[in-house]
Image (cartoon, rainbow, N blue to C red; front, side, top):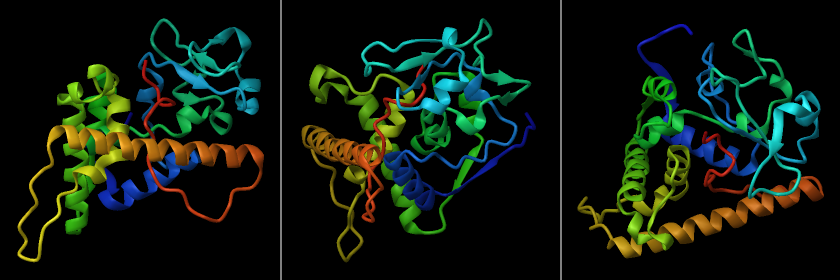
Length: 246
């Protein structure tokens, strides 16, 4: 991997908008990975869905095992004794054109956006090199909201059912992207910022926004299964059950 001090992550608001749409539509993240393959070498299990027939045809059956708690026919692709994906050959994905949607949708910039560490030191080091630009106040406000959402999810887990928020870093980061609008501060004409809502109210709003996202995501999946997509765009962001979380 060629080392550079910083990696350009793009304008925050533009990246956030593209990421939200891409993750709902599940048509893949456009990540300028270069020679980096950190996420392929850090002991992650990769979920492969039963409908991913081209992917399943490329992976030897003995490398897949049933995925507990996921739909029948789902598989998990493991890793070798060095933590590397078995489909990685000479630092390259040997099935890149047919790689699982889990891999297509993975974007380590979510950790930089949310300001949290990954579950791997290697990915964390890579993610910290991403640098977003903030050409407008909207960029700055949205980035602040994403980070505020991540802090709330991490520190106020007792406000949610079961007394905890997302358990894995990638789920936390992606959920922060999903619900960041809840944490956007608004101001009046004088520029005075509104006070934050009570924690219980914020938690309820987080759950409401994420529930709407899940409904939109389910509708998008159903549309893909039953026929061509409609022309109406679907907004939202992923809650994270399909992202690697070794």
